[in-house]
Length: 112
Image: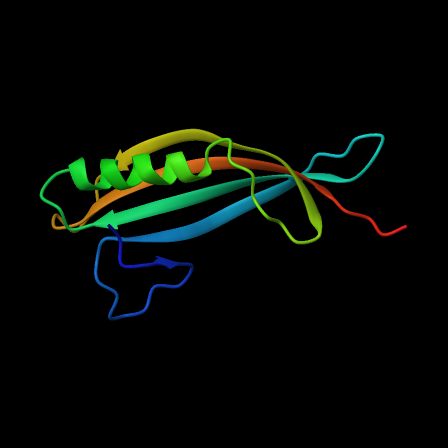
């Protein structure tokens, strides 16, 4: 379905692929510990003639991440929520771009 998931895309990468980021993290502390809320953007890039291929990939990414438990070293996972998706125009008319946003809530595991 995709050729890879990247935070830095190799020059020879063929579409469709996914890129991660940017990510914004803010404190979400409670009386019992230090929490974090991370907002992660997931970008889908295709060279399809329309948005259907990107929408299908987006549906799969949402199914894999929304409300799914994540393994987070040093953290206790609380929730993963899909916030929105958007099909965006690209300056290059051959490229289709989709943006998905997820909010991930976690608590930092503190050694006693």
